[in-house]
Length: 105
Image (cartoon, rainbow, N blue to C red; front, side, top):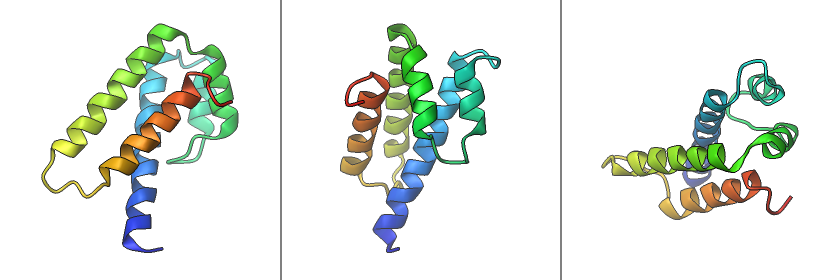
């Protein structure tokens, strides 16, 4: 794996953990979505978990989640030493938002 691929993999892993953290703030810990999120491996969100989340996530919490992720990415890119590829990061974020919104399922 070259340096660019490593940065891409690192970004996805960190973004997935941020999303999982934000989702755990939305769902009660006894909710099926919270249990699925907690059982996923570190840095990954399984398709089964995404199915549970997208079937239960309502528009208001989805907007909140998108806002938090946008804020987080903007903050990460505000650091001078940030080495992530902006185009890649924004493309992955938009892809995930489409999935969470129930599009392209």
